[in-house]
Length: 370
Ligand SMILES: *[C@@H]1O[C@H](CO)[C@@H](O)[C@H](O)[C@H]1NC(C)=O
Ligand SMILES: *[C@@H]1O[C@H](CO)[C@@H](O)[C@H](O)[C@H]1NC(C)=O
Ligand SMILES: *[C@@H]1O[C@H](CO)[C@@H](O)[C@H](O)[C@H]1NC(C)=O
Ligand SMILES: *[C@@H]1O[C@H](CO)[C@@H](O)[C@H](O)[C@H]1NC(C)=O
Ligand SMILES: *[C@@H]1O[C@H](CO)[C@@H](O)[C@H](O)[C@H]1NC(C)=O
Ligand SMILES: *[C@@H]1O[C@H](CO)[C@@H](O)[C@H](O)[C@H]1NC(C)=O
Ligand SMILES: *[C@@H]1O[C@H](CO)[C@@H](O)[C@H](O)[C@H]1NC(C)=O
Ligand SMILES: *[C@@H]1O[C@H](CO)[C@@H](O)[C@H](O)[C@H]1NC(C)=O
Ligand SMILES: *[C@@H]1O[C@H](CO)[C@@H](O)[C@H](O)[C@H]1NC(C)=O
Image (cartoon, rainbow, N blue to C red):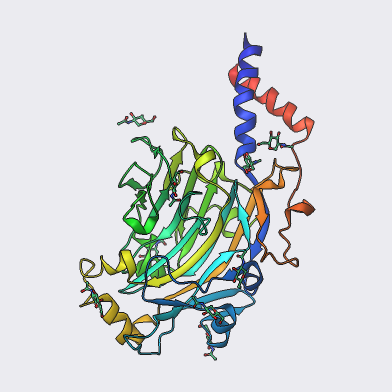
């Protein structure tokens, strides 16, 4: 009987021990962002008062800046705009690599703040709307804290009302019948800390956001820079991590009533800063911002001096157990051959669990049961 129970527990224990283990696949620090991301100089799909610039324009006008340990991207904060001309210059960047099951850790020193701003850090395939799902990790408007972590799906997806997470669900219906800009709010979870967003986030020196996506759940964590509970493997940028040791996430989206496997496809990491548009524009007055959002953005360049992202690092991890499963990271045609993240090389793989380790886990499980 105890042997049977031991086996039973082990079969639960081994996959979960493997499930939280990931190895570093791509580390972005300083100028590595320039080769591992593309600058999307597209028309803003959310109709913002923005002009997304190319990487060369961004570098030439110092709207993108890197040093050995810093990556900054900011909006123009010196130009008064002609109301009939293009919007405020800003950056929208997208990872060259797409990810499925993965963990991404963002070490952020500063995020855009101020009336009219709508910064976002998310994962999606932005060439297909929400057809491949969308995970909004850090997003908000007009400097209103806290952060909202939100899923959007094209298809039925609901969340259980009782979830093990620190944040507060505003809706449990994640489905968006059309695109996000069409008034679809998804299933936001508000972070429990004012330090998770905007000016307050910046006052404390920013912090770390992390997302874990598997076919069974999506989890997002946040630790403020001056908090005391940040896992050391997160703050140090460790090569090997185990999310099961990170504590309760701020947001948890299980697959209980949501087919994550089918509703979510391969995603790029996308980071932008837009102004006004469909969300920040409508929420401008209610946030206590003065007058008309578009007019404000046009005529108050100096209000955007602190409208910048500053990253210490962005690191992506793939499952340690997927030694020969490299399909979880795929490249677009803009993938840089010099990048170290090529999955075909298998270089992200460290070690699979050895037979002695598995045996000791089995023995340990039998001991626990007895
Ligand atoms: C993107 O940049 C190219 C090259 O500078 C330019 O021709 C094009 O108009 C830009 N597209 C948008 C939407 O700004
Ligand atoms: C470019 O931006 C960086 C970061 O904001 C700043 O430190 C630097 O002085 C700027 N360079 C110029 C030439 O303005
Ligand atoms: C959502 O899915 C439906 C049916 O599969 C499709 O017709 C529609 O274009 C999709 N919408 C978006 C925004 O992807
Ligand atoms: C929520 O789940 C927890 C843990 O499973 C349980 O203790 C609690 O009673 C549940 N609360 C409600 C309102 O269902
Ligand atoms: C974080 O910084 C703020 C502002 O300086 C301070 O009030 C707070 O006590 C700090 N928290 C910790 C855990 O150090
Ligand atoms: C703000 O002004 C712009 C033109 O400058 C106008 O198109 C827009 O409708 C105005 N928004 C509101 C909320 O009044
Ligand atoms: C790779 O993934 C597939 C599908 O998830 C699975 O069936 C297969 O066992 C995996 N292979 C390895 C070596 O993990
Ligand atoms: C890799 O991605 C596929 C979907 O493309 C998924 O079915 C599979 O479970 C993933 N494998 C691992 C090991 O994460
Ligand atoms: C590659 O980048 C260029 C400009 O940098 C862009 O026009 C093109 O759409 C990108 N290709 C893909 C597949 O994303």
